[in-house]
Length: 571
Image (cartoon, rainbow, N blue to C red; front, side, top):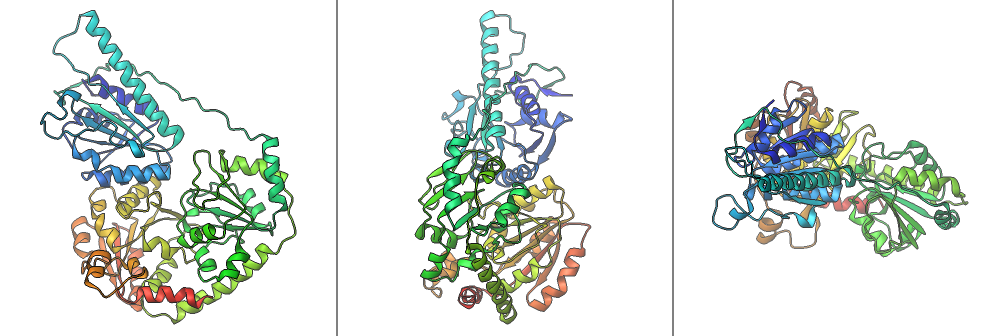
């Protein structure tokens, strides 16, 4: 096979291979040619070419999300590097191992007026697990014989390989983004069949996790005495928690388990639609719901209502279970169990006693009443976002992947009890709208499952370059809810009729997706009423020869009234 003649490029490629980084997303450029040559020539590497660096990084994020292994992105020098930042911040807060490899000019060429040069060293320092700044390796035209130069070359190679090792180990062990900045001298395109480096592989030591019984016992005693306990589960990969532990928690009459759509955790006694439960409670209702002990696990919580409730009606104890980090979201965190969740439950649940309590029973009755009112309200409502989501979510393909756009999309889906065979994901690390489509495409490629992206109009048009690649599977579906603006802003306080609101908050538009679909080769379907949507969904899902998009157009000015009326109706 062909290698670059530049040793540091070989070191990057070979150490990625040694660490199991086999999926590489490359954006075109000249300065990164030595890396592109090495990765594309290696038979063990799967490479992807995506022009837009922002889209490429989110595509890689989706791949890593599904593969549960590091995925690398490679770009040229200059402003190209900065386009990775939105996905890097998402990876940082979502614990996704994204390996960013940026080509660079040699350090003496920075800030002297060379083209495509910026200060790339440590450029992501606020949202990165490790920044590896490599040294340039000049390749002379003739063999070096000077012992001092030979020794210097060895030291440079050793430094570079140590830094590459440290970065890749951080991504693997700590599950998050790392940055490897690689400066190159020209010539950039020369190749050789000779392996010029022997990669030094450094393993990162990990300490075994141990929960001492004597440290756990006081917490088990508190738990056993409390008659109102709540477990709140944020973003989780499917099947993260062993079913035996879920069954124990679900059968405990003193425990409420609140989950969200992105929790991917199920039990008949769990509360999957938290906003339906707490969205219309009065002060007495909140006091009845207020837990004595709160345990949180998983990633970010979507519901603002849950956050407001637990910040106002705080538990006496808040414990978080996570081997990496704990956020004091409710301003009362007093214990971080820094261990894997299944390990915690295996040590904890066999030490507790189950008290007499009506806590779960009473709130299951509330859930039953709210579910009935939910169905009644849907029957009465006219055509709107809410009605569209009801029809769409009832027709999703079982055992498939569901990717959700941010803002109003993920919040609407929270109000429904969806098919439990679905694997649900959303970029909730930073909750941005900027890479939903690109992430969903990467996830579809990585999972090899039928995938549906449900997204809003602003998110879709913002990330339309997510469709600019040749890897979109034929079974990839996009459902676009187009209400001609940022509808979620209509729910917020303020004058909805002012020109300032319409232009700078709601951002009204008259765009549709038909021309984008024609340009990128997607089948296009459209529905503007309940009857049209019911009619077109069969045709939409019957399309199997290429990806398809269903655009659902809803009335811009009615959606907020219907949604706000929902929480008044289900009291």
